[in-house]
Image (cartoon, rainbow, N blue to C red; front, side, top):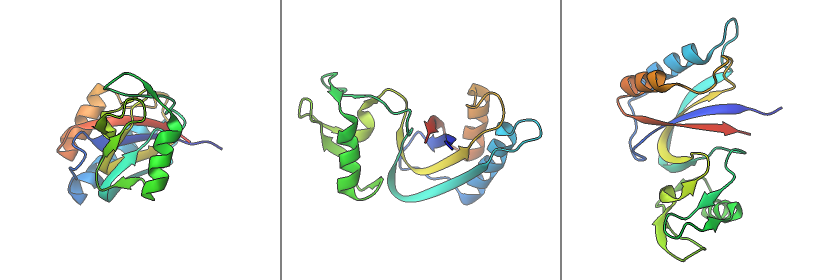
Length: 156
């Protein structure tokens, strides 16, 4: 069986909310992503010690370089993660294989949004017809959290 996630992260990769704010957002997201008579499977906030890759799973299919617009193989990112030993990073500085430019991982262009953060709120298998949060709901999440957020849709 496959799973769909909505992953919400702060727009500032180093920012973290208070535990109270994270719990408030989790309760709100649970209420809006549950369909009639059926609750979203799981909503949880995760605090990371280091900046962590928040990927889109099978939705991540293409990466391009912001410097030369060249394609970057998906395997390249996977190799970086494997060499690092985890999805968390001490720094995001890399040299891209296409043009050898020195950039940060979060400045690459990803066909479907991914992100890097020290906090994420993830909702597994929303049950309402509209899976992703709309602009009004995202604004409410930002208000409850105390910081603007980015939404990442993921499928595994």
